[in-house]
Length: 83
Image 1 (cartoon, rainbow, N blue to C red):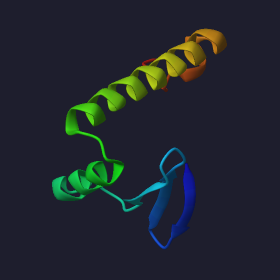
Image 2: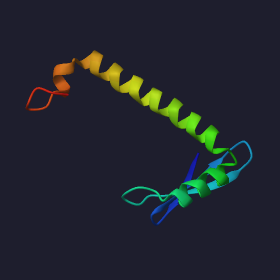
Image 3: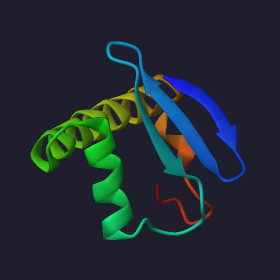
Image 4: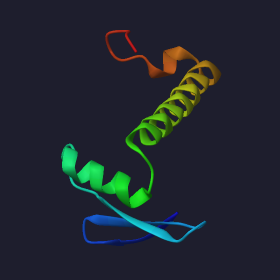
């Protein structure tokens, strides 16, 4: 659950155990060490994190595909006719 933002860092808290973790909101990619620190703060394994990412990606993909089918694919076509 989002708690607050301090500068370019967002602070989240897991309600179940009040575990706090900070996510930098910088442009570009996270460094591997930073990502590992966030995963450690979440108190989960790298494999659990990967599973959560896969679940999230599937939900986002499903939502986008649903939006495309509801509003018609033509609404999302670029000038060249491609999606």
